Image (cartoon, rainbow, N blue to C red):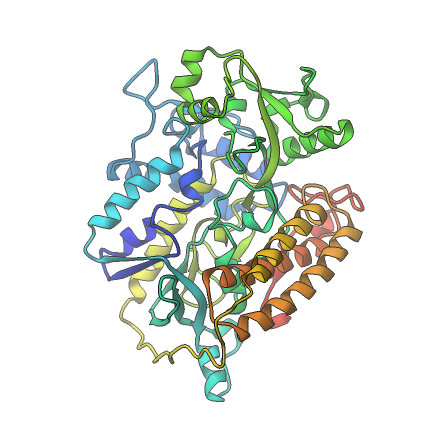
Length: 522
């Protein structure tokens, strides 16, 4: 939406979304948006914190750009209408949180519903802009490139690094029809891939669509082995993906066992404020060592009034579930949360395929390295959408677009075996959780590679035999992303950041560098 608003000043923009416009990973972001905001902090501090969290793999240029341009983008967002929580002591200033890995308080937030507030403000602006057309309940199936068109005509396709995107095929989820869309520029802003794992904080729409489409189009995909598991997802039978914000730990929350023992200081001197990969592994170790279902986050040091004011959404939802966080600790477990890897881009969000851009979680800009610093993700989305617009605007109206042929469904028929899709979806998510989760082994990852290869073969046959549905397209994308994660993880024979393998428990400087996969290279 931020990119669309920037481009709509110069050209007509079409937003395609498979649900409703506000439904996204961004909407569920609780903690906030990190930015250097007052004189007690500095760009150097924020850069250093990000680099440390990234465990040696951050691209320094991307970090510098994001940190230094971030405050201006946040001010633009405020001018657009986003309302962040004011300081309790000084209504003229903003309340700033501190989260794990941050040396200073720099997290602007809208209570504990920051993402929802940002999406609300952007949604209002997009709906009012006459140059933005929003097509909901439509899902991109595949990108159209010049090389794809050349192969279809029997011509010699361009070299991989000279390829260019010219449009996309889009499935209307209400009619089942596939539409051909030509476009001067295509931007993937499809969020992450949390649904590839059995337990995730992500909504159902997070099926890795952008990464899978980018890979099929020949774009470079980088660092997909680095999947961030959020340490604290609510453990409750009636709520499978409710995030308990890191801000609670920044506000003094303590992780404890059922007996009330605090355990984080045994794993890291920073305790609960250690980076997420360390906290998630510590919780996982405690659960496995003690045979627990979960651990607990204790917020009883804060009063009912403080908890209600600071965390109205979390406090209210847990109260509905019968948990009074002022009187009892919160049951939590780790869950897949954020993909640090994605479609590899330059400092303007452009992929290795010309005119194909990737923004937000579906991109790998180099900012996050091997582990994302808390609340840097919303900042990255704003900064790189702005920078992408700067590159896109001069290209508008320069090149003539080729005609895109209508979608060819071949002999595909309606499926009468939807149970196959549901069963395969569940199978992928379970073996990814068990074999390529928080703690990995080479043997389990090899087993996952064999399983995902078999599943992908089955899905490809099913994909071409039956008419497309949203579930089938998502399943195909999930299987592709699972395969990329496994292959990338097997390439990295060390432990670094979010990738921890028992077989290679130490970091190895020979592996400092991006893990890149590409369809052109097999």
